[in-house]
Length: 248
Image (cartoon, rainbow, N blue to C red):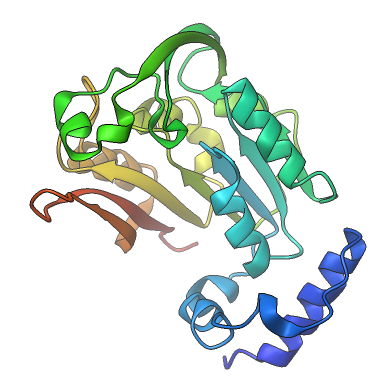
């Protein structure tokens, strides 16, 4: 299927108009028409109706994928209150967006959470020296309490139209999210999951463990969406691994 960029632009213009925005020129799409949309053709063709953004932070992923899927309903999960408020403000006019001020895991309850000044690296797990050595901006942190719920429990309260994409980026806590959301995850067509090749957080699971768990749930590893390189020696520390549901 050849991507009709003119049609894509028309859809996006209509979408942003519904949100109260008027795009007076195509500067929003410059540099993306031939690269951004074309490089995501493999995803666009799947026409997701639901996107779960687990570990949303300020909505970086949700904003990017909103451009690709203007008709999808996006559910975002972010446990840090002040970051959650930024996320909500960013999508305040998006009628197909809902956010939850929660962390996701295996069990429900209130848990210690290690919030860093560089909020992207905050986690339910303590960071290791390797993370701080490679990224000095992650050194300062404070311990707060957050509410945690399981994905399967939350999914009983929301409408998950298929096909569905699930993104999980929770700084070393990915396995607990998956274990608490097996039934929901099985319904997804595509997963994008952050995996690690080195221990950046205490007692975190590595790629092999996440790979085995998702294979058992019926998914096939298809490569990496993005990778995080060490600024010190260029080694690959983490990756956003792509998994497709087999026979999905």
